[in-house]
Image (cartoon, rainbow, N blue to C red):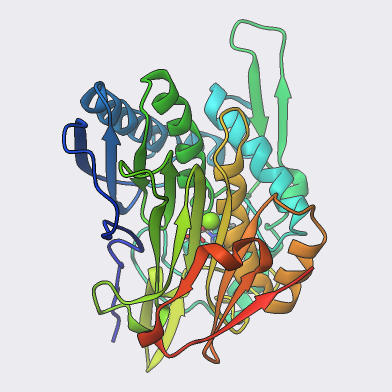
Length: 357
Ligand code: AMP
Ligand code: MG
């Protein structure tokens, strides 16, 4: 028996209560179905409608370039090129380069070339199956981010990229984060004072709430995905990205077993690291690709597991990013930079731990 559960909104921006909302601030809220997700875009200020629709345009434009199921997308053309270099647009050039660097930085826990394995499990086309070990062993030989190659050419269309013969790239683990990075620029261009952008697991809390308090970002309780507003806890954030990866976000069941969409490139199997979700939080700054970084890290650290994820965090300077880890054995581990911005949901039953450097 096979079943797919696409959790609809993974992180909800809670309206909350408390301070006085300013009643006359213009606001626009639109829902966008894109990148396999239900997204919610809420912008504020005089130009809020134009800003919200410009955000939607940005997302749709990226989806067109990066989709693996659209044979005309740039990614599909690169994947079909049999190892030859192809000209690529600015977005794919930047994102592929960044994704290859993030693959190296996470030592392949995030690997942009994992596509053949993701497809074998049926996650690309929604045709779920459990591949044989022999099939996985064969496909794992193609998974190697070192083969990704990009080049800036002194010609009219100056960017080119190539991957190894038989290889394919999957940007599903970073595309929404990159979209959130581009949205920061769109919001600035439209002089939007505040916005909350929920790209399904990828949240951008931009500015603060109209009453001057931080946005409240709920972290879905992975153990209660069928319940609405069942949170492990809530983060109070301004000008931040908060990106969550979890096995509960996309999975199927076969013969009583659950198989989710985050693949451990070391085994070819869905990651089984003792974590049920990883949330990565970093400052939202224009000109930095922190949304992309959070997205790749959330996928990678979910694969790594608690101990390696915390080592990875300790190896980087304070303030670069912070984590909320939800574990299979009923704990929520928050890194110290988030300690006073995270409130555990008491009804969740989790125990809260703060990780220090
Ligand atoms: P996310 O929800 O950001 O964690 O991304 C999960 C998506 O990234 C999956 O649906 C796959 O398309 C892709 N993916 C799965 N495992 C990996 C991995 N280890 N490295 C890179 N991308 C992955
Ligand atoms: Mg990700």
